[in-house]
Amino acid sequence: MAAELSGSTALVTGGTSGIGRATAIALAGLGAHVVLSGRDATRGEQVVERIRAAGGKAGFVAADLKDAASARSLAARARELGGHVDVLVNNAGIFPTGPSADTTEAGFDRVYTTNVKVPFFLVAELAPEMARRGHGAIVNVSTLVAARGMAGMALYGSSKAAVELMTKAWAAEFGPSGVRVNAVSPGPTRTEGTAAFGDGLDELAAAGPAGRVAAPEEIAAAIAFLVGSGSSFVQGVVLPVDGGRLAV
Ligand code: NAP
Image (spheres, rainbow, N blue to C red):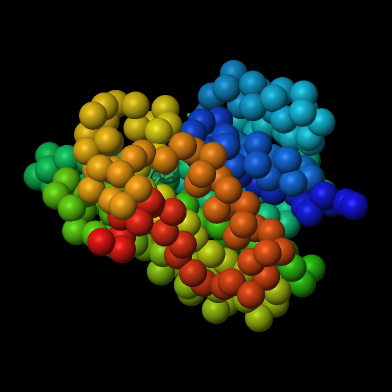
């Protein structure tokens, strides 16, 4: 039996680390040709090697996602490598926290560019092609704090709240053409990016029913579900993958 995603190409942004790397590995395990992007070429090639060593298909594109042009050129490179892009996982993101009064305008713009503008233009570039082919899946990576008012999270949380609304609007825009657009909303997850939070991550996680921090593979499994045929009637949802934290 053919693997579920064989014949399809998946672009995973931020595939050099944490949740993105676990997602790239998971989708390759389902048979997708994975194009992963990031800035760190060494880590990117390591992920590619790991996927190839397991018999999968992958390529790395070094891309500093800093404006619409960089998003468009990543889309073009992914198209070149895969022939077409059937799956897009908008995972690359930054998550600075802290008092609003300490936030600079440049810092504000960096968060909204990485977390909102780049995913927007990647979808604008790739979703119409998926729609023309009549199928495709897009998964955006949000966060628990997009739906909870937490001190120090106004900038980051609001950027991901925008991503959640875009998810629903894109489901309406592209769903009728066969492109499913969904999001995951992870809770605290152990990655390179959250290493600096130290015990703070465990404290945040302790408040939820699971009472622990997630492994990136647990988030990747939910993303793989939203990409695969098991979620064929799931459109425009934001799936909490947070150990129950949003529920309580
Ligand atoms: P991470 O370990 O810091 O990895 C972030 C990834 O994004 C890296 O691959 C990085 O690439 C890439 N990236 C960041 N800025 C970029 C830029 N300007 N251009 C290109 N690539 C860029 O993060 P993570 O913890 O796995 O988080 C991944 C996503 O999940 C983010 O959207 C985050 O907001 C979300 N999330 C995380 C958690 C958590 O607790 N970890 C919880 C909720 C939501 P390079 O390193 O190669 O530059």
